[in-house]
Length: 227
Image (tube, rainbow, N blue to C red; front, side):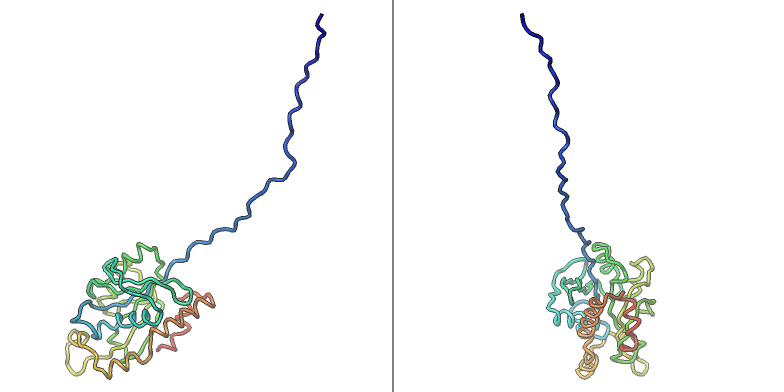
């Protein structure tokens, strides 16, 4: 006769008392948006060295000082990518001709999703004395067709910094259109570049990066320096 056996359920293992290991991964910081430095001008040998294309020369100066090659053709512009004092930058020279500059600038800003307060536009100004520089955090186009085009492609926004370079008024009764398309004389070129605005811009961007100021606030604090 078989003896009856009492079958008890096997003891199931309880939850582990060991603490779960949680990976202590630091949060990933978002990649900073680049600054866009744009010089306005007209492309081609015919317009090299003219007053209206002085923005191109300023970009060339910055590029040379910072070792940035501006040779890639994108967004209807010559574009170079690099950094200034640890701040990522794009340098651009629109090749659309002056009056359509906004087509190029607007495309770059849209593609890289650059905030407008990180777009610095450099251009010639008839209303400033020759070789004077003025940095402003925002403003209108002042009758400058290249700036008018940029503002139009920014959907009417004027909230972006700009560096105005004085080229003076035309002599006598000369048509301003003819005047801005005239090349600088050797003496004028030396004078307009004597401030070395490319170097100033590079130094000031470094200063901005070090102290962490909003560039617009920094510009306002430095207007007297450039005036």
